[in-house]
Length: 115
Length: 112
Image (cartoon, rainbow over all chains, first blue to last red; front, side, top):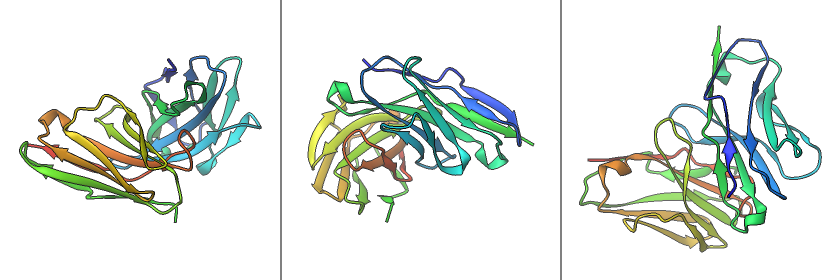
């Protein structure tokens, strides 16, 4: 069965510094990949998606991610973070080969931006 | 309109009550989902509707009963819940099952 690993449960970073949040998924022939952000007491907001095509995906709020099929990774990056980026970030995978098309979420990474 | 609207935002119910959560989207999406999220945990999938038919039920207890009256609406009927069912319940929709999902703000449910 498909699984998603976000190794870092918490990532502290200073304002205006770059950040990378890591996401690895178990091997599959065909997947869709997503990153979501969740602010306290709110729903999830889609940051970016990889369905096909270019492996470098740009999203909202200056975030980007790179799909690496050989390493089964989809790491999220931002060159310069702001205090307002403090939130929980979830990586999600939709395994097309399973036929069920259900999302599998990682355990989340709490990004804390320090002044 | 790119919103998924959930009502109510907060709900407190007793263990003998019957209540319903409602979800609406007008994006023409053909897949809709219910998720349960406990504090500091990722969302857990409960149900998936695709083209108004239930396609996935993740072994959810029968005290949770989903309903999809039409392509824009999704309900979750609650009956005889337990305190451990207290959580944030999230609705989402996507153009097709498995594609990018758009989430509502959730209903914060407390069972007393």
